[in-house]
Image (cartoon, rainbow, N blue to C red; front, side):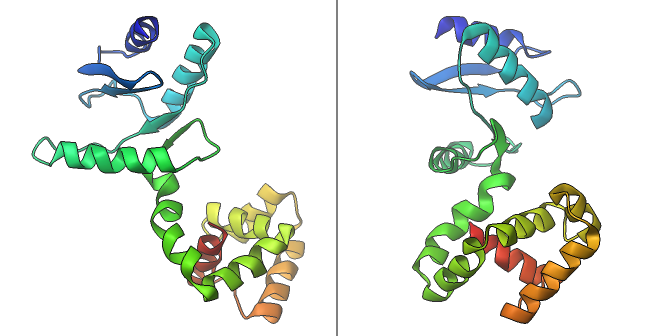
Length: 184
């Protein structure tokens, strides 16, 4: 653990305020935000280097920047609960990437209406990919088509077919977000 702590601390441009372990496999690094602070993308490179150098398999949750006047213990505990219950595919992630799933999962899993829409959307693998791509591309059909390796007209046709079959119009942001939520 000390070797990992030392290697991790050495990667920061300015030494972190604190690095400590919560358990054998879980630790925290706290840094003051400054011009040299890492963003999430830079953390990906750091973690990949640590994994390669130390034979580790790290995952990093990048917490929010809180004011020292906030109840940091309560906020840290809440962020940690989210981190421990979510399992995103990314190695480095933050709250924004897992919030929809985390905060809506219990509510949608108990609703028969939500379950029916989930079944409708998730049964069609192609539709599922379309919803996710459109959501990630903020509803931009051309960008989503490029992401899906589809011709724009083909994607348009599939969006129109979904509208005819279900009444859901993925060109409307409300419908798109609803469908994305139902996949969570």
